[in-house]
Length: 185
Image (cartoon, helix red, strand yellow):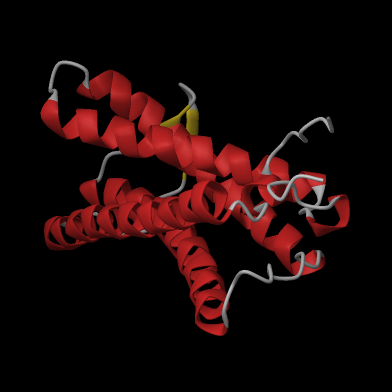
């Protein structure tokens, strides 16, 4: 048996794996959209029209994912992970959950504080969650940007850890969350 394949019982449940990848693709898309949005005024209206519903989708899926996480046991940590690495993995997981919940809410508050109605999907209007206030808008906008950098840093650390386990240790870490299984030879 290959060392780089996790046993079926050591894998996350299928719902967790699907939610993980939906959030991953949405967050990567959101970070790319945000990067282009701040550098291109020409595409800004289109990108904002995508950015708002995608942020709401991330918020909803992360809430579902958190409920799913609390309802299901996670596989035992790998033997290749030391005590500090287990702590760091758990801490970064919950930090990422916090950032993924906070970031869309702060974005929603930014739009609310700007006084512009929060409209997504063309005609669905969300209620404002912050008062229309220029000072609050500036504070929330800076917070939204800082949270994006924090999310990018935690995401990058997570990705580097996965790559280290997958390419160097070859301990099956990636197989635990992958949507597919490798065929046995």
